[in-house]
Image (cartoon, rainbow, N blue to C red):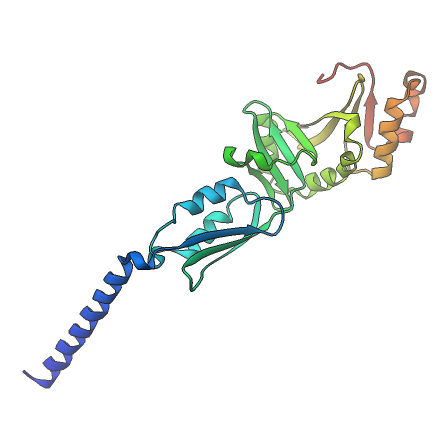
Length: 249
């Protein structure tokens, strides 16, 4: 056997040895995950993330693609970012950062939820509905309105309008519903705020100052409203206060 052939044979033996070691490692139950740890910086871990992670229980650590796990988890609308690693003790450790939710969107026809964040609007999995925060503004809209809104792709204006509804967190006992509608042709949108125990609706047509919103709510609640209907725009710029409308009308 020539020297060259000896080198080739030695290389093949080494490669086969390395391959055999990898086969043993990939199939060794001694290298299976011992534990899965999931944490989040605020609130609860989304149940769908827990369900997804469970499929890696007792899986050999060499068969786990950490990048794939991270990318999949970051698709969850409640997750801003994720860090994934396997520890020396064979634990899969997942650390989540919660996304900042600006409002909850309720799509009327399908009775489904979505969240509004600075990045856009994202559908909520049925498994994660328990994370819907009723302390946030919940905005109702029809499916065609939601579809039209999604086509705009630029949510800055919509987010700015929602930001001015934050005051409703403190005055939520006055509001029975918050609905959103728009003209699909020109993307002109407005919020319709229905006040509790009255036949009053406030239509918000543009970004407004929060203290004006408070004044509008107080104004709409006054018993002598009908006597002062001429002061609508003086009280609340960019809004129309309507009286004697049926709730939901």
